[in-house]
Length: 458
Image 1 (cartoon, rainbow, N blue to C red):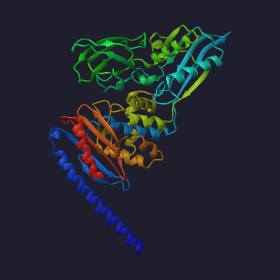
Image 2 (image 1 turned 180 degrees about the vertical axis):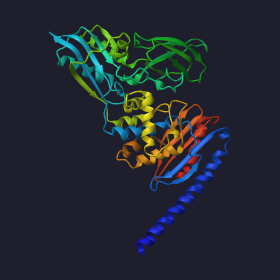
Image 3 (image 1 turned 45 degrees about the horizontal axis):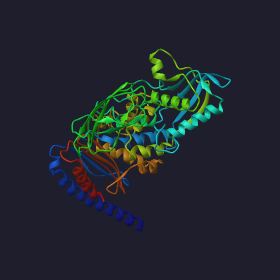
């Protein structure tokens, strides 16, 4: 009898608490929706209990919304489910041909698996300096002092469509719109430093200390902006292109390095390894990629000996950086890894089917990429929360939760693209997704208003 009474008391308390919380959120939501910044906006908001898997509050939860980078929480959960938190990418470096008297009569082959961390400065084990040293040591151990062939980064194991269809022209030449590749290098980006003119409207100068890649040509159309106008510089290019057009304005008082996307990351790695080895006494005839050889109807010969195997950090560490720093490249590389044929199209279908099998309607997860950069993506707040609830039950949940940034003293991932601001995450025994599209006015102002709304969950 006592146990029955105790259970009844807990149930009644939980029910009253849920009703009180719902009322508190309702008041905050009504105030939020009355704000002038939301006069022409669409808003979808869903809150659920992670303890009971029940709805606490909902407002247009089935409305398809542009999610921005909050889509990354779905990609991360999918990758952890499929690959496991201990998964590591592997890049193999070897050669074809034979070694005679210190001379490799053949090519050095870099065969990737899509590792987005290769050459990245985010991890001690993946920096370019570390990779160079390991390659040089492996060649010395093999007795190779000269190479008659080329340094070839074999990226042809993936198809040539390296960008999602839904990305816009203004994004894809910039670091956050970098192309995918079977052989990534330094997160597929490079730096440019500018020196503005003393006269507004006059051209800026490029002052890079380090010589840029010989296969790239920058067309500088950037002009000097007024003091305080900041960085309004964009790169315009496409995958495998030789030319990158730099356009926009760079403020007179700005001292900032601007990052742009590498059109061909595999070629960049092949060149950098070629250049490094040459400077350290091991000459070769040049550098190339599997894709470029394929265009010449030349197949990369099979590797006859593996000299070095480079493993990435664990997937849990990759997911941490993916969500904390909102790295679009990481999401797209994971999508292609999970794809049955490593294509973007089948990777998207794979993610949708994975969640469909868990009860999530494909129409509520209408996506064109894995990172959220495409403005064509449509996801409902209910679907976002359903994924968070599913993740809570998994053994990898702690690694997943740890990857969420902290905003407003809450663990949540943000999503920000043109007139879109979304937050999806956890707070204590609740998970939530708030998605705002087409607001007007200041982003910082609407952000604070969203935080005020989310404070009602505390």
